[in-house]
Length: 280
Image (cartoon, rainbow, N blue to C red; front, side, top):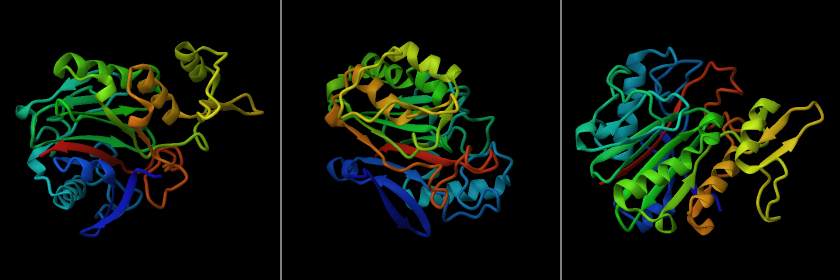
């Protein structure tokens, strides 16, 4: 069953992890679409990214609309300058508001974030890369990671889990996780250079449970179709998260440009969605 449930809220189309929010009402967690904002083409319409040469005033209005729809004050959100790395930032109440109105005030060079603080909303930007969500209901800790292929092969999922263990004593078997809308194996073609990085983690002669989705498919042209969602699921399990605790979307951002921005499908000229998670 698809974990990300489409909702129309105050003109915006948003996706929430409905099962999490029902079980844990202290959570706000979801993913934006491209619909319901004010940006003009090619960023139409709910672009949340300040770095894509969209009109700044339009982006800030979109961010305000999103905050209103999620019912979290915009001053509680935290944005970062993402660099496709695997560094984790530990957030506290003093980080509230960073990066909302300008890139200069954003957290610099970070791709994963964890916190136990309440009334702070972690935000990360996406347009094909994989959003990874983490929640430890025992220690009331949350995490969010941005995993493109570079972050994935740097095992950003495992690094985030490890930091939750170190900072909050989170036990991997108690953490629940979700993998959000992102480019799927149907659309993500890569070359052998990228695959060599994947094989360094899993081995070239990989044997998988027949029930697991494939990590990749080889094409006749010598390229490969890569399953970033499954790579991150496998890394999560290797780090100790139970398979039954991992929710995986069926949405491909490249296939569904009616709903999402896709950097690859739209040749780099497009907007950004935001993944968010917060404790209230």
